[in-house]
Length: 166
Image (cartoon, rainbow, N blue to C red; front, side, top):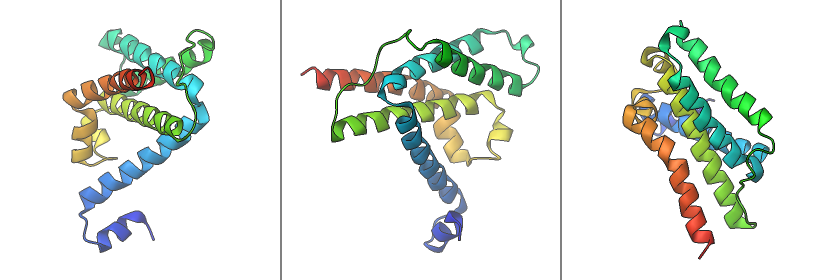
């Protein structure tokens, strides 16, 4: 039995079922991403995402004949920067214990959401709506949402730094 039919039996609409499924997938991907990358690379990858996004947006549109080329350029930029910046940025999330795991999960969650927001921002809306609901698209890929998901990881790092240094 799939998640859609389970949630449908308890009275949730199809769109809400899509949104709940997306949230569950994002939470699982965030957990795996955070555990796989670790605290030493989370901030480095965030910086690489910002740099790659900035470079991708600065490239004139005439060089991308299709949104797929722009998406590949962005993702390749993140991967290449991550591979070559092994010792470039020595910034990591410090600490240990249960609070530490919470910070790693929250940071990885914000990074995964930010990546998804960028990908949805790059691909055409019609294509994106084939994968997610219009509500989720609005929360992830609208102009305001892209800005919010871009600022949220930096605000979270500021919040953690302030709390840890009290």
